Length: 553
RNA sequence: UGCCUGAUAGUAUAAUGGUAGUACGACGGUUUUUGGUACCGUUUGUCUAGGUUCGAAUCCUGGUCGGGCAACCA
Image (cartoon, rainbow, N blue to C red; front, side, top):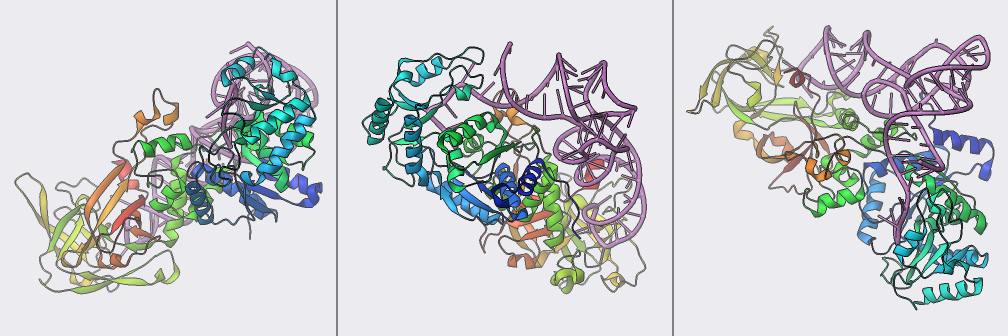
């Protein structure tokens, strides 16, 4: 029973086009990253939109690398992008590159020159900028604008042949120097760059600009719906104009609002700075909003897809609460993550009436949300246990359902214990607490008739293993670091990473698998970090559990 | 001060001239061997001023506020 969901504005356009029989009802989208950085959660929105649309309307999606600027692009980025898209769960119809079309694009430029719609300009970048005018003043033509078609053809061929140095000449579209749209004031469409390209090597020394590559690439692939973000709205007249003048496939561009999220930054430039200036470990640092960072943090592809589904698609500037992403990952992991016990900040509990040296085997299910518990595992129990320091208070307030002298709790999957006493060191720090256990209260066989409000987690001291546990907090201290006074890096949270070198974990966790989510009961969801080894386990906390108690106090 | 865009609870998003709804958040409750989950309930909204209409979030006009545009970046 699928629920009726309302359409977003792009789905409406697609449905109208299909109903009108446009392109024979065919839908072909594309995801067109520039391989100059790693993908982030904002790209995930675009990926889900493009691939999701194609899937919904029986179409296909191409993965096209927009690699027209050789000085910024690298194969390393191509590889990471492909990995991330695949990991998110999408399959592209074809893997394509704008650089595959350099010959065609060159010929398109020649066509434009022949139509008298493009000219070679010898001006410097500064001169061109000055001649463009301002939003309120029209630009002024220069002497090069009136060059003959023959001369332009020759000069452009010479540019391609490598007769000029970088910056000596550019090819410009001849449109309208007085246009209120600055982009139409004779935009540059080809520039000289004697640079090595990650795919075409040194075959070319002239490269097309975005505006003379993107729309044409869409047309060459016969993309039906070219979806991009709002900052390209003012490029659309150019997109349409070139397609019309070149008489090629009429792809259409549609724009949606990019994703912004609280407490993080989303631009490749800023993410690159965080990496280069060592504010984070790498592009896949678990605090980064990159796909690889979220993956390493323990986010699942399904949770990111769900997030992208929930945030919607519209044209309004937006700022999504980080808590929505957290909701999505909790929702997923709650149903899939195996429950385990780990004590992050330990204090020793001694059960005074339990035989010293005795070991009992307790049993716990893997996941209570799954029918039958999804299997389970054994946990050794003894008279000495590690419990969480915060689960004991010398002077417990009312409604503190944990330990304090005279209070009782259930040890998860084991016995009910009553706190009798505790010991402090010279600094007043509690070092040990003493309890008695109720023998008839064993989990699953409880005949004690005692009901307790609280249940706490524990790990048997002689059986415990250790692991490094990394706890993360938001990377920035303010909701919108890009919009604050000064540099966005001034707002980095100095406490975004807290490392616990030796947490106590239950023995079974030695079998933890890379890529799998675990819930450390009452402490949150965790996953193995890529630096983890058999000798030195390292867990990342993906997200905490929702905590109604912490908020009140 | 030119052009392009947009404006619905705290945050997003729907309602396509006819009951302003949903999700997240927040708050309260029930259940619970995780203060988790699940379930139930409460809360808060159409930027503004006019106009058209039996009826306007929706159409029209003016204003206000936000975002984008003057890279040999994409």
